[in-house]
Image (tube, rainbow, N blue to C red; front, top):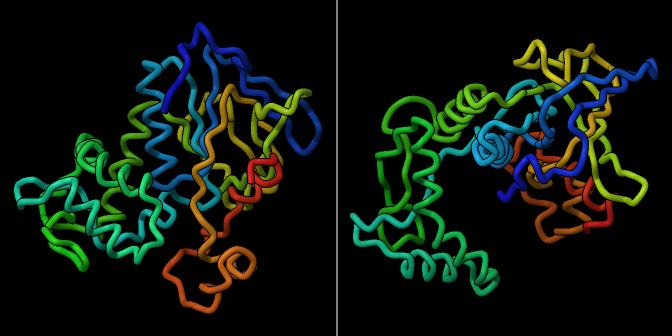
Length: 274
């Protein structure tokens, strides 16, 4: 994640919120706003890193449509695979195993990124207080390299509990029960915010004096931001999208949660980023 120093930011330094009553309310903010859409591991990581890289000089709001953070990330049960030299493993072995298991369909650049940055990714998770010291050898792996917590809940839930805690400690505003429906664009077509609907039981935020404020169920909110990050995951639970883009898999059962409906894909396509 690369952020410009706040002094160089060109864009809203306040969060502008418009309620369904059309009453425009501006909440003064002394720093640029970054909106992260999607509260799984990717979104939580982006939000935490945005605060860290900018030394806390940006206001970050993490928007999640479910009532809690986690998404599919919280369902993970195998562990975090990373190059593990202590078991005889290497980046080359991890890359070869992944390419072989892909049956010739893998993107080599992405596989190289996966293996080459896996140790850094594991260290990142452990820096948030996770104990991932149990190492196992899973299918198609030449060496033990899959790390998980030795005790407690499934590894995905353990990771998301730790990341949720870290997001709160980092000063990230977390808004659950908030469903983003549209990317806001300026007159030149640049994305400068999000529009979301608060679900009947949603609108919860961890900050009483946050720029986003507290909102009632059913309220429509438009939040302007210096930058918007989409981290909404895939569409494994959307039969329509599977039939359209992955018809060979449309008939298969899935372990995806119902939240994996691909709305972030819709947002990007509507913006012309398909």
